[in-house]
Image: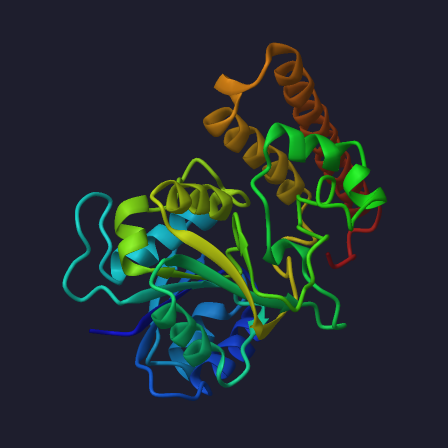
Length: 312
C-alpha cells in the first residue's frame, strides 16, 4: 500500500510551487508517495511549469476556481477516497494537504509518517510552521472557535493576554511552540491525515470557498474519536497567504467561513444573548470587509481610468 499521497492546491503561485515540489522530491527516508496538484485556473504559468518540470506529478487543471475545499476533494477522489463508503484499494495510508507556499526539510515526510505509525490513536498531525523571517505561524495549532474563544479574540483579550490558558486559546499562544501537544486542529497548509480518519470523517465541506474547511474537517475527525497533534519536531517554512494576500475577497471569505462554522456547530447550543453578539460581530466584520473590497475595486478602476498605461 502507498505510504502517502500529497495534495497541493495551487492558484497563481508558480515559483513558490516549483520550490515546494523541489523540496518534496528531495525528501529522504524509506517512504513511497505520489503527488497530485490541482491548479485552480491560475493565470500564471503554473500548469505549464508542472507539465514541463514535474511530469511525475498528477495535474488536475481546473478551468474555474471553485475554491480550496472543492479542489482538495478533487485530489482526495483522485487518490482513492469517495464521498461515501470505504476508501478504494489504492488509497494511501496517509494523505497530506500541503500548500504550494511551503518548503519541506528533507526528513519532514518520513518523520511525520513515523510519528503517525507510532501513535495509532492520532488521526491528523501538523508541524511547526514558521514564516520566512523565523516567526511562528500562529495558525499551525488551533482551538476550535467556540463562541467563548471567538469572543476573546474579537474583543482583543487574546492579544492582551497571549500567555493565558483562558484567553490565549484561539492560537494556543499560551503553549510552548517547541512542545508536542494535542490540539483541536492543525492548519491545512500542512495537514497529514490517516486513511481511516478520512474514511470516517468524509471529504471536506465545499460550503467553504477558502478558510475554515480544515477546522471543519478536524472537528469531524475528532468527533469520530481521533486525536490531533501539533508536532514541532518537524519544522516547515510557510510563506503564508501567497495567493490571497492581495485579494480583498479573501477577507470576506474568512468571515463567511467563520459564519458557516459557527452556525453549523455552535448556533443551536448558544444562549440567545450570546448568539446575537456572535452573529452581529461576524456580520459587522463581514460587511466591513465587503465595503473595503468594493472601495478597493472603485479605487483600482479610478486609477486605471486616470492612468491607462499603468500595469496592475
